Image 1 (spheres, rainbow, N blue to C red):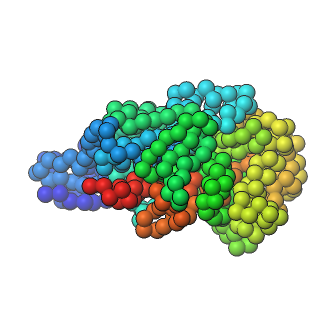
Image 2: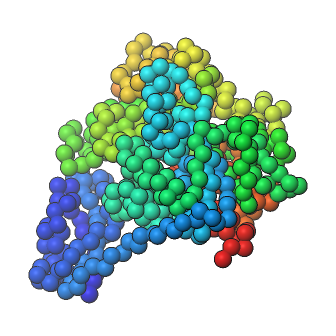
Image 3: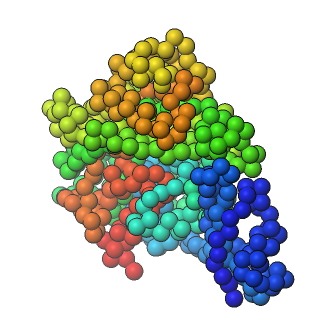
Amino acid sequence: MKHEIEIVIPPDRLNDAEFLRALSSQILRVNISEISAVRQIRRSLDARSKIPVYRIKTLVYINEQPQEIRKQIEYKSVESKREVIIVGMGPAGMFAALRLIELGIKPILVERGKDVQTRRKDLKAIQQGGYVNPDSNYCFGEGGAGTYSDGKLYTRSTKRGDVGRILNILVQHGAHEEILIDAHPHIGSNKLPIVVQTIREIILNCGGEIHFDSRVTDFIQTGNKITGVVINNEKELLGESVILATGHSARDIYYLLDKHKIKLEAKPFAIGVRIEHPQTLIDEIQYHSKVRNPYLPASSYSLTCQVDNRGVYSFCMCPGGIIIPASTDKDELVLNGMSVSRRDSSFANSGFVVSVNENDWKEYSSFGVFAGLEFQKKIEKIAFEAGGKTQRAPAQRITDFVKEKISSSLPQTSYIPGIVSSPLHELLPKQITNGLKQSLFLFDKKMKGYLTEEAQILAAETRTSSPIKIPRDSETLMHTEVEGLFPCGEGAGYAGGIVSAAIDGERSADAVCKFLNFS
């Protein structure tokens, strides 16, 4: 017999198995000797009261042993099977490949960047020398943007697919089992590369192909049907269909699609800054104590409000993390955040962004569907020039930002390339500046102390999502006008994060299988 109950425990008892058994016996009013096991199935930290506690949903087994609930997927050889091309090896591309193998189809992965180990050299180059490799950086390369920019797995896309399945596959390939029960699971940028490498080995061992340093420079079409891609202007790869999983920063793919007269659509997105606080300050606000309990993790937050009918919100919050340069071109400055699994940096940072739409980029209307993208590029260029045309970031204390004055000094920062005091209240578009300024006062009411001279903003955070959508049929998931082309993931406008992109990759693989009448 088993019972599902909720247990509330102090942080220092989180991993105390005997305490959980004793508490379960009290709640169920059974003898502790009858409890065979207590399995955690969901847990979350509740810091609303003065003393934070963990709320744990558990299965309590009485006089019976728990069954293994996780099933390992067996991936078999597809070496001589029908072939499908996948462009991009981020979460959408990798999970599409694994799903194709599961379905008996051979994936041919094309990745413009380097493998996960070699890619580290390019990240070091941009961090320490300001050199941007346009094909291998924090956005491009094996594993995609999530590999070296945090690895948060929280998603609201539960209606789109089986989140638990995605998490189980990550565990099967080396992620810690705790991600299966945490309300806000996180792998960490120090551990994700191992998971990514294991997935790569599975794909190769099953007969799939992976082509690194291979940028798609053209599509091969026969009439309205796509039949393959050209890589690096020289090599042709043919397949029975193409899954396009290129991520939100592969702008050249949008231009290439447009060149082939393949339909694109503009879409709203969000633009702003990275906001950075001392982690101790966020801990004090969230945990109601000047000293963080050593059994509590670095605290996080999620804030949102409306200013002049615009959404303003925190995005990709990184407790105990650092800010990183996510630029994909030498003449731009783009920021993102990341945390390692321990989340032990002395800084907390988050995206702090304002929603934008077609009314904001009217001056770029001559660019047609690319107007929003040009607006995005303009802000990245402004940040780059304000930083001295380097990867140094323009920055400003938030107290000075709301007062519209240049900061005479700046707090310490986690951003390795460095910062330079800049009038961001003047450099950013007025609608973004206004949204950020007003929301700071609103956020300070929700988290007293958030608006402080100890905090600063750095520009620019522009890659929250793609400004372009690649339209597809809602049933077949195939492009509305091109047969055999399956746009998916963040770059196509159908996901926002590791898990939702992975779900969309699997859905696209299923759609390809149906398209090929495969059985």
